[in-house]
Image (cartoon, rainbow, N blue to C red; front, side, top):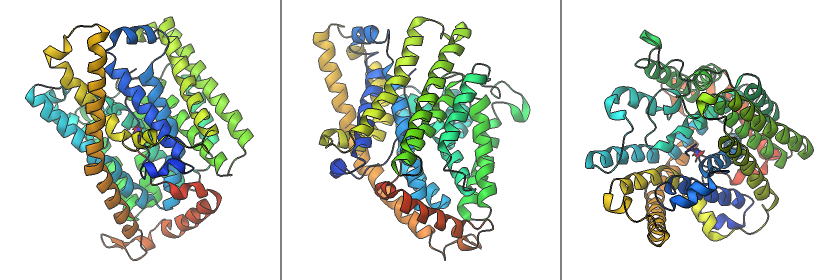
Length: 469
């Protein structure tokens, strides 16, 4: 399984100065996960012998994205509850994710036109692909993932939708129950969930129309929630559409049970956050986390053995599935145990730029692949190691540039707009936010105040992204 995520989408950071804070360990995890994803893709071009050896047992990309999903699950609810507002959450999410996401797609298109990249078939169906990409849902709307890592953002987006909807009915705190429910789905029906059920349909349920209809419904739902017209109804409309797509319309990748495995991991991350903030006992959270891990690992192995046509019945895939999920859980657990320790500045900084690293590294690798003099160079380590070092240098340098020039300014702008939008007198169209038909303004203020009292950790959280990264 190639990565991302996470997603990702990846939580925001306030810079290396956070190295002494309670959340610096999350930066470190994101930095390590980003390196794992880069290694996953880069090792297919350089240090190929190392890739072949290690991947007999362990898939670094799969491991990296599940670390990202755990981190997102931990941090995104803190961001929502700190804001205490669905509209503020969506405004900040949009400014956090979309500017770099749009830049990555534009850069991929430019590279393709210059002969140094690929659009993975999007050029043959531009309208359908654009509709699938519009809401960062390409992997559940039948669109190609451009860049290839954007598949994880589809699952991040569905999680955002679901979390926001639960928040509007004050049901967002039952994270352990949701994690268990997703784990049960993996075990009970994960192997029979359809893949791409709508991609082969006809008429309104065909691949030409489904992305447009889904976009319209989800945008209408988010619009109602943001404008305060019908916060609950709008949030649930968008959520039902997103969850339906994840359940029956994954684009033949990753696997039928992967969508609910991802949600189970994200809600497990949320459960751990709630245990850390005193909303759930740590023993209860630990037991649920272990049970969910067992269900997702065991369910995947069981269904994989029943579906040899998916390439999941062999020992290599079985080892990769087990070690990736368990490895991600152990990595998160170790980070949690060491959260009070000082985090190396370089890891904190790498975590800060990890969203850029995640989205942009495939573009660098695609360009490398299309330069024959480099791609067909000697496969000996004497040549491969310097090439690998050069690629990492280019990726990190470019990611730092896009972070400081694109991500950081847009994050600041998003925070300012979100704060201004949530003032009681702010209006959306002709309707007052404070006079929302669902009473969100008053209700979310109470929930936000309670979250601030019971989860002070969220005060230092500026938000999260990807997978995903």
